[in-house]
Length: 250
Ligand code: ADP
Ligand code: MG
Image (cartoon, rainbow, N blue to C red; front, side, top):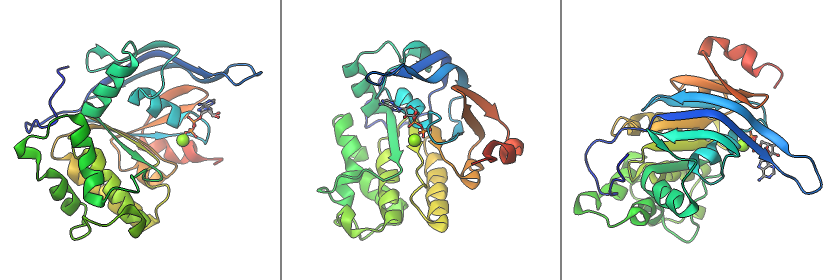
C-alpha cells in the first residue's frame, strides 16, 4: 500500500478491509469493562459502499473510529489492503489518515473560522504539498456540490444541508481511499438527505473509494452495495431483503 502524494491525479481505488476476531471494550471508572465489539470478522471489497446499521449504542461509531484509527482495538486484527492497520502507532495513523481517509459526520464538523473554500481545501493542505494539477480541485468540488458563489461564506451563513455538502466536498477533495460517514444524513430533512447521497454517489465515480456509512434510515441503507448490521457485538452482512426485520423494534 504505497503512501500516495495528495496531488496524485491518477485514478485511485479504495482499500479492501479485513477484520479478524476484533474485540473492543470500554472501561468506565469503577465499572466492569463494557464489551462493544466481540469477535468481529469482516471482509470488505475494494470500492464497496457499505451501510452500517444497528441500534443506538450498538457500536457503529466505535467501529468507524477504529477504522479511522482514532481509537484502537483491544485484540484481533484489522488490515487495510494487505497492511496491518492495528499495529501502527499514533503518528503513523495520523499521517496515513490525512492521506487516505475522508470523514463525514452527522453534525458536519466544519471549521467555523474558515470559509467554505478553505474548509474544502484543508485536507489537501494537510496531506502535503498541493500539486498544480490539484489547485483547482477545491473550487471544482464546491461547484460539484452545488455551492458555486458561496466559496467565501462561513459555515454559520449556510443551511444544514449546505454545510453537509461542504463536508462531503471536504471529505472527498484529496481522493481518499476510504470514506467514513457517521450518520451523515441524520440531521437533514428527507429531500436534503437524498441530495447528499446522490452527491456522494456521483463523486465516487471519479476515484472509487471504499465507503462505510452508518445510518438509522432504511432508505439510506438502500443506497449502499451491502448492509452490515451490528448486533450483540458482532457484525453481520445482510441482504437488503432482510431490512424490515433488521429495523423492527427500533
Ligand atoms: P452507536 O454509534 O452505534 O450509537 P457507539 O459506538 O457510540 O454506538 O457506542 C457503543 C457503546 O460504547 C455505547 O454503550 C457507548 O456508551 C460506549 N462508548 C462509546 N465510546 C465510549 C468511550 N469513549 N468511553 C466509554 N464508553 C464508550
Ligand atoms: Mg454513533
